[in-house]
Image (cartoon, rainbow, N blue to C red; front, side, top):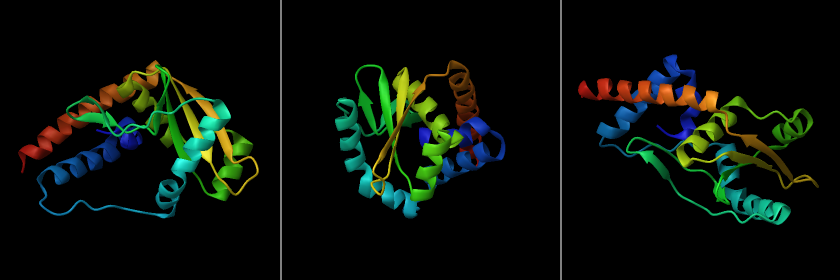
Length: 174
């Protein structure tokens, strides 16, 4: 169970069921793992280093890059960086339309909020800076601090346990 799938986990129902099937498939399939790419993920891979550097220069925070942090053998996350002892950074390199909308509405997608809450849970952090980056604009950086929400985390924790149970049940059929 990873934070990039936090919305599937927190939404439960069919999304969580589909995610559990996906985990079991990756456990038992001898085939190569499929990688799904789109313009947004390609853009993120290209721009993330510059976004991180811009964030560091803007905030004077040093960002420690990490790979994958495990909570336990079946739960983890890969935040875009750790800052100080108690917060994270989540970087999104978004397209022009989404960037304008974000700067105007100042509302972060629920998908990303859930991802950050799960990351704070897994990494035992109190806050996360959501960093949106788009070099096509004079103001290329948008930062919004998200605080740890214990109610949201409790919901995620409960559904992680349900997801683990589904994985166990589905894997027994294999």
